[in-house]
Every structure is written in C-alpha cells, then in structure tokens.
Length: 413
Image (tube, rainbow, N blue to C red; front, side):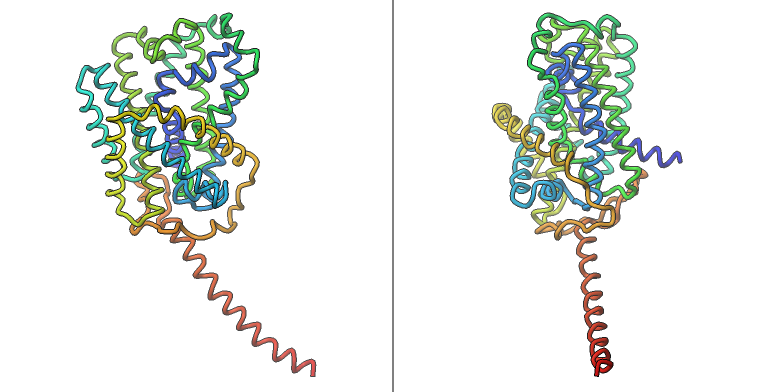
C-alpha cells in the first residue's frame, strides 16, 4: 500500500511540476488569468482545477491505452493524420522557443537575483539538463519529486502567513469592470488549454510507460487537486494586494519577501526549480518526437536540442512567441475539446495503426528505479509483435477452414 501511494505521489508531482512553470511560480499567469476578476477569479480556479483533474487524467489514460511513444502519436490519434502532423510541427516549434526562453530565464535569475554572470546560469542549466535527460523519464520524475514538495511547502506558508481574510473578498473598481464581459469563464479554459498543449510533452510518455492504469488515474486526480490548491492560494494572496501588485514582474517574490530573507532566497530557488522542470520537460518531449521521426542516438538528439535552444536564447525569441502563442492557444483549445468529447479506447482495444515511420534505433525502456513500473519494451515494438502474432493465427484459421469444406461437401453428396 505504501509503495503504491508513493508511485501515485511521483505521478502527481510530475504532473504538477510539468504544468507549473515560471509564470505560475512568479504569479504573473495567475494574476492575468484569474486575479484580474477579483473574488470571481476563485470560481475560474475551481473550473480550471476540475479540468486539470478530469482531462489531465484522461490524457494520460488515452496515451496509456494507445501506447504512444511521444506526443506525435497522441496528436495523430486525436487530430487525425493530416491535422496531427500540423499540430506536431507547431508543438515542436513552440517547445523549442519556450525552452530557449526558459534557458534565458535561468541566466536572468543568476544575473538579477544572485549577481552572477548571465552565461553561467545558462551553461550550468544546460549541463544539469543533459545529466537529467540521460536518466530518461526517471530523471524528470526525480527532479519533480524534489521540487514539487518545496512548492507545496511555500503554498502552505503563504496560506498561513500571507493570506488575509479581507483579501479573499476584496475587489477594486477596475476588477469590477473586467466582470462585465464574462471573460473569467473563458479565461479558465484558455489557461488549461495552454498548459495542456505544453504538458503533453511529458504527460503522454508518462501515461504510456506506467503499467498500472489505476495508479495513473489517482496520480492525475491528486495532481489536479495539488494544482488547484496552489492556484487558489496564490490567487488569494495576490488579490489582497491589488491593484498595486500588478506593476511587479514577480509578484509572488515580493509577497514572500515579507516572510524574511531566508524564505525569500528559498523561494528564488523554487522559481529556478520550476523553470528547470519546464526546461527538462520540453527537452524530453522534443527528444521523443525527433526519435520517432529519425533513427538517431538519444544523447546526440539531446545535445542538438540543447545547443539549438542555447543559440536561440542568445538572439531572443520572445517576439516570435508573441505571434505563435495565440495560434498555440487555438490548438490547445481544440485539444481540450477533443479530449473532453472523444471516448478513450477500450483497455484491451487495438493500438495505433502502426508504429512511428522511423522508430529510434535503440530504446531499451525505462528501468523503473524510482518505483514506477515502466514498461520494458517500447510501444512500437509491442505493436509490431502484436501484428506478427495475428498473422500466423489468421493463416492457421484459413487452413482449418480449408480442411472443413471438403468434408462438408462429402456429407452433402
């Protein structure tokens, strides 16, 4: 029982760590999507929490049942072969840009907060990311299992020491104006859609490689609950300080600063950890997709992706993301709708129609060292084996039918 709950915790922590990025930790995304609507934003948080619990779990279950090696197979299953390829290309481009921005963000933390060289932060993050990526999904699970409890600890500290009872129901005149167009309802759906569009890079392989579906479901449910608790706590803390806090780039850091120097420094480390979890999650997703398309060595793909992100982080990519994000949001909304209304395949149903075009040359499977029972063989090998087993069975059946027909004819005569 203890071992099973530990596995559930690992899945939930990976889910939370994948969704929670720099925008969540800093409080910016929470403020823009929820707190601008005042106390009503809490209703939006409740909607988002339900969607995280329901559709996040469903995403992993679908990936588990179709044995998706990466988000490439998952998108083609949902969108179809044509739109699926378009969604995959856009996802790869956005993940590349976001990863470069996250890499740049690690340099900014070193420079602005720790007064260390900008390039030192980037290079150190690349080295750490490469080391974690050599551990495959186990490395990502381990990092999230370390960072997420720290995030939850700060959530409790903020709830106890920062949130004021009057701040929960406080609303300014400017916030009242935002309620006139009922944008708070759509805002919750857009927030979840954008996060799912990124999170599938890790959640799809995680769902595919965890053997026990019931463990996967509980991990998704508790992950959604954890995300909702953090969203609500941060929302109340920020709402108590509206509208002046809107001028700050990292509102949550300023709120935590009031708890003392040591908590403030720890919170900066948590922000770095959340940026890093997003960074390695994106690199993992891109590596999986490239391996699905080209038979290249895993470590070479990881190095190529990190090098590309390093070069982009030097020249800037933010302006391009400004134009690509809305399009990515539409893809995310379509993904949300398809997840909501399409039934997942049956547990013993047929897998995807064939393996990736060019599966990786080597993919030994994950060892499950952290306790999660990952599958020992890659999904595309399993599908090929299933088809090879079906072929002789069909031939044997045809032969049996041939043996029966002559005897039936003799009886008729």
